[in-house]
Length: 317
Image 1 (cartoon, helix red, strand yellow):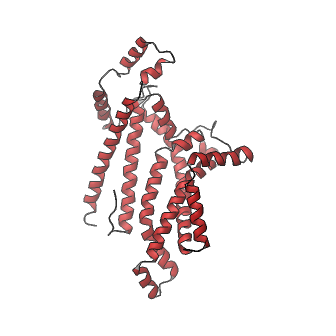
Image 2 (image 1 turned 45 degrees about the vertical axis):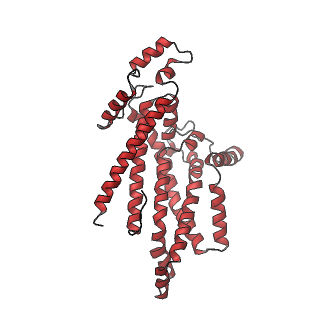
Image 3 (image 1 turned 60 degrees about the vertical axis):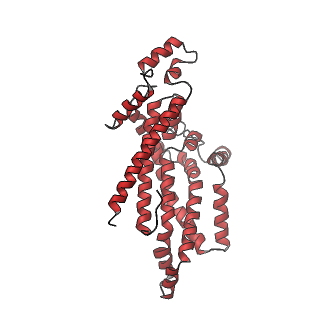
């Protein structure tokens, strides 16, 4: 573990460079979009003079590199900038959308870990038998269905036909914890693909570990089967599963646009869609920074877990 601090420092420096690259790329792509916030604010039949006045008021007439440098300087002091569309601080958009997204992500992860690991262990214990083939077939079939199609199917059956659950979260706003029924369908849709990929990774890792020489040696020494599976094989299967889980949490926290749009949930994905539609560059950039830092932190945590359980393996950045 002597080289752990230097390894963490290298990963953090790489993460900072990745975050900066994401911000620059998002800024460049947003600048390349036709129109800008001034056109969006000017109305359906904009007057060129009104557009020019709005653009001057919002400082959009300044060169792009000057606006980028000014925004980056404020970011160093914790200032994400001000929305061009509303004049509100960008931080209010982020904090407002973070609550619903965090709630969905937390519920999904709480169910994902036991379900994914449990299914993977179950399939590995019955390798080649009916249970293994059944779990593998179901997980592969569910994974092949896109989230949008799966969400429409669940909504049609459980909301429109049976009437057991509300079809959307319209009318609930950000007070979703007080209406748990509105969270059932979105969480099921969010679970559908990650639980399949996690289960298949755990299954493959468990099978490889159970076939390894050290497990065979442990069995020859009379180590109980449960201890072999959960004390020796499972920790080695966690290494790829931890990295997959980090990518899943990153995907959840960075705003699942399809699910939030389908169920009208005012999370970070909805904030991002609205900001892109309004050409609200500071909001898009602020979200890009949050997403980039979240990705770096989660990948670092996953690499630390992988390094802890498999210290001799090379961990991909």
